[in-house]
Image (cartoon, rainbow, N blue to C red):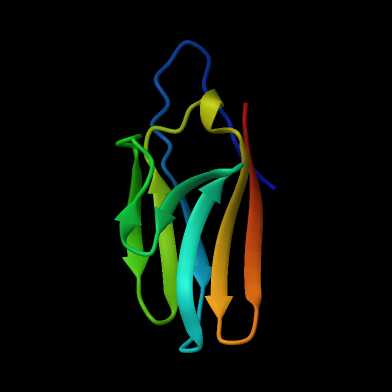
Length: 96
């Protein structure tokens, strides 16, 4: 669980980064928020300009959510397809 605290009556300047560790057996990767695909590989599927892909290398798959707000709260999942089976990493973002 990740918690981001919003200062009262001020603009949120916090940026949240999430990363997923991968290896050379990976064939596909994706970031999801609830059931919405944010990124599939290098392809951006969401319309939100605050969500950006930071890294898609052989060892790391990272996104960043800029100017986090309360609407960003919820589960985020990194889905990785390997030769044998899928793997997921999950994090739950709490914004206060």
